[in-house]
Image (cartoon, rainbow, N blue to C red):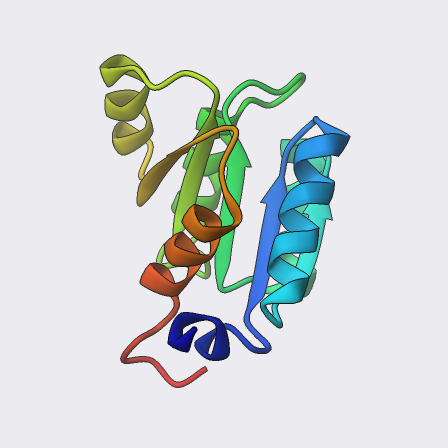
Amino acid sequence: MADQTNLSGVKVMVIDDSNTIRRSAEIFLVQAGCQVVLAEDGFDALAKIADHHPAVIFVDIMMPRLDGYQTCALIKKNHRFAGTPVIMLSSKDGLFDRARGRMVGSDEYLTKPFTKDSLLKTVAAHVGRGDPA
């Protein structure tokens, strides 16, 4: 339970073209006290990131227009957000996908469908344990 108290007020962005994934992530995160920003795709997300400055970003790999790899690369290229943890979300758990995620700067890889526990543990692991919130 200690992890959940650490998450109070943490701003988390979830970028996924699946409404079901966005909603379930939002429910899990809100229950843990997080502020949640949702985006349907990479273009939608890039505009919202600048406005909301999330502490952690989850991005689906397979999305129309701008996929998760491209979205992650664009986030990491921006000096203001290069240090923001980006966690790739994918239903595929392949070595190639993980390696490609690392190449564009992702900080972790979470396989869908995720559990509430795995989602919250991932957020807790990346929220500035040493940074002032």
